[in-house]
Image (cartoon, rainbow, N blue to C red; front, top):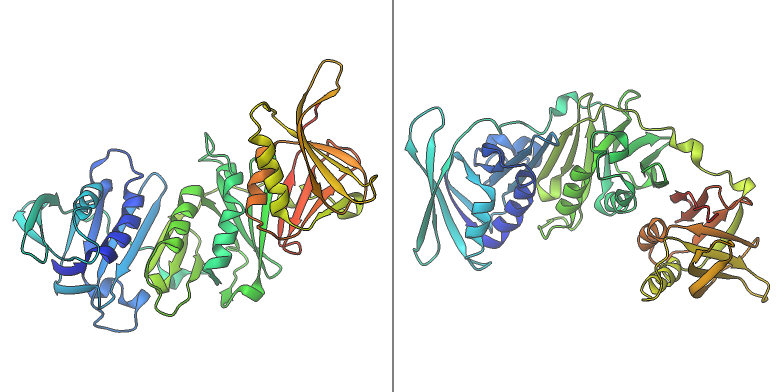
Length: 421
């Protein structure tokens, strides 16, 4: 194998691949990234041109059953001189790439040095001035796993990167990350129902639900047996990283193709030449719709700007003399205008609330009441809403679940308040 490639483009793509290989523990081949310049490996998936000139990078993480693939084929950044394939240690290669300037054109060549079942290779990197750097690597065929067989796909839909990122950002923080990787509470639930893609996460204490209406979906085909799946946090973080990385999108847009078959979930981003696949998690998500409060049995208080409420929480938590495990949200309109008084403090033995600090946030109040809520559970979803209006639904019993609603009901958060007694 021999290629010429621009350092900047190569580093961006290689860093994403190493992000998968690097999650694997110290276990030989899984720390390597596979290079391939065989045109037949990717032209059917990402290009209609039969003689597309480019390089494919593959990486796997067997702990997460995750496979990542990216193609670099921009004619201005890469030139294939000789077809072939080899494996290069991910972190070692990144350290080498740091030595070169972004616009440097590198010549990368793999030379076989030993014939055996595990062929030994030497990778030779030459910069524009002719300076060479050599290091040994190896070849194996254990990473040659395709992201999925497109002929067996039973369900698929195409959504924009903006909608996909919104679904990830608004749910990923509400997942249990310690001790729950093998359970449903360590994954995010994707479900297609009633012409809506529902993205849901829960940790038994709070629930986040982002709706992506099909009016935002370009193409779709839904099979009754494969309309939902559980996606791991590591996979969603990789998708987010791939969609936000500084890679060229020639048509000016980035769309995400989500495909499901009976065994795998596959994500394709054609404009970025990225494919990610993972084995479907075998488990049942809880009946989450049952815990959504009935609006008819609640009172609604309206904040015109979610950011103001989020700033009030941050301001109180930054007060040095305050160390509260919960905040009190007191809705009142006795002064002639609606206000939510956000206060921190603790309960003492006589059950009187001791004020530590408070900030008033203007809002429309339907009914006076107070709720005690963990500030972490509230500030994280509020931070994703920006300056959008947010509706706060509370029940007469302050120990029953409260609900936040944003984007005309497309984003819902359900929280369990704290009983201060």
